[in-house]
Length: 171
Figure 1: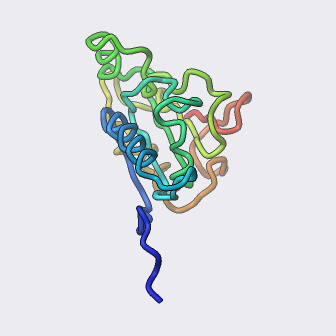
Figure 2: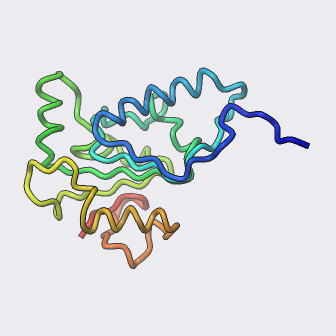
């Protein structure tokens, strides 16, 4: 018997969105929601990496554009850099509110348990760095996620937050 046709017949193992690609992602998610035939969204991705995301810092909160992202992903990782000048420029030139890729989420207590937030500021080379996730320890950290290593594994070069279970600082 042939498999039942679905809106998304194949699972994609990884998806990384960089900078404004996260804006595209929020609109793609909106289209998935609009086209879904049920209230439950299909699992499309194993891992989603939001790298230097040039979207509002509250985008993952309830009733915001990416609030349902954890439904279509097994894991979501946000990598941000407080010194990212490209995102500061986005704030100033476009009149945007704070960016997710500059300081992380506006309210970490509202993060879904599937979402991990990783502050890379202390290990990024220079303030102008916007593609820092492509090299060194951050790239290794992404590889560990792809290898299904738990987010809180001691082998990762991360310091966990004292207050929140899914917030980390790269070391």
